Image 1 (cartoon, rainbow, N blue to C red):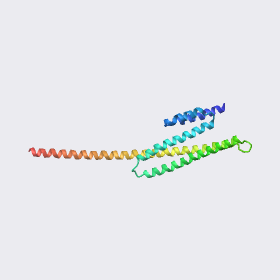
Image 2 (cartoon, rainbow, N blue to C red):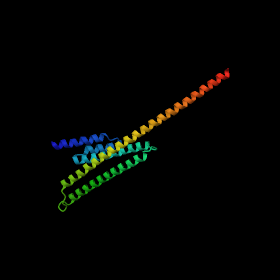
Image 3 (cartoon, rainbow, N blue to C red):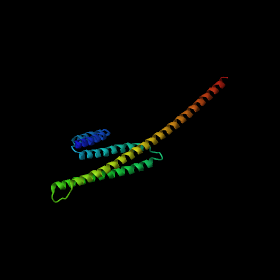
Image 4 (cartoon, rainbow, N blue to C red):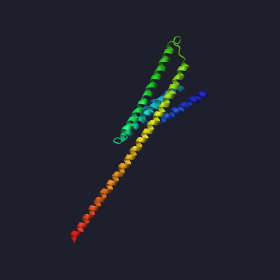
Length: 195
């Protein structure tokens, strides 16, 4: 009973993460993987891949936000922060793949020659779960950093847009004042000419 509740809880967590996914081309792949997952380990793998996909989407959004601030004083700072966050995440993702492949290889060797290979499967899986949990925490921090950077760039963009709009409005009002003055001068000249 407890195991079923635990699996359902994990599945619910994965579905919630799936709902946040914005990419329609990956949707079918993840839906199939979630529906076919029959144990918690597979659900955790799907969840890890969903988090990675979500980070990719947020990275694209952040890059677009940074591009909007091109020309501002903070543009290079935003780019360097983004590059550092992206590199850290790329390292985490590649380490996740390496760990996944390593455990897969150990399981293959264990299945092929169970007597000569001394592997404690439970211990190996526990190590893998711990590594995955740490990597997911790192990715959660990365996601928060990306969201904060996106918010910062959007705020700067809005601030710069407001300043530009204010400047344009003041220029327009100045131009209108000049036009009105010219019209008044023309009217005065016409009145003088009529006299």
